[in-house]
Amino acid sequence: MNNLFLTGRIGIGKSTILKKVLNNIDLSIGGYITERIYEGYYRRYIAKSVKNPNEQYTIVRSDSRDNSKIWFPEAFEKGLAPLLDKSLKSDDIIVLDELGSSEKNIDVFTSKIFELLDSQKIVFGVLKDEDCEFLNNIRNRKDVMIIRITEGNRDHIWQEIINTLKSFI
Image: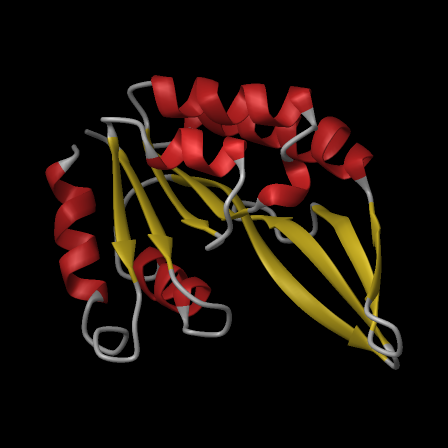
């Protein structure tokens, strides 16, 4: 087993824990992290390369006035899929922060995700707590470990996650 995902409700601290773990391991890290940028009424979600934070892709833009969203599938196809391909060739750990149902129909990207999961590389990521075929196919793999983050474990589980990742080496 070499694939580990965190899951839990929105805002519980999954990405915060993921970043804390990454700051405390000594391995070559690739992949991407997702961040929110507030711009007035708008929230822009960007995926940033872990290796090169200047390499970033807007994946969605939402409007808080009506909760409408605009998705940018080309960010997954032309940005993140090639970024993950580079990570597969050069890094020890590939970070996927985060995977959700919005990318389920972006074949170039989802195919790359399954290629990563099938590889010998360590995959460490966040799965949204959503029900869709793409995410369920990841959850149901025998080579995937999932840790649910809760208010009760979020402050101390990061060391256990580090130990689990080290056991994959």
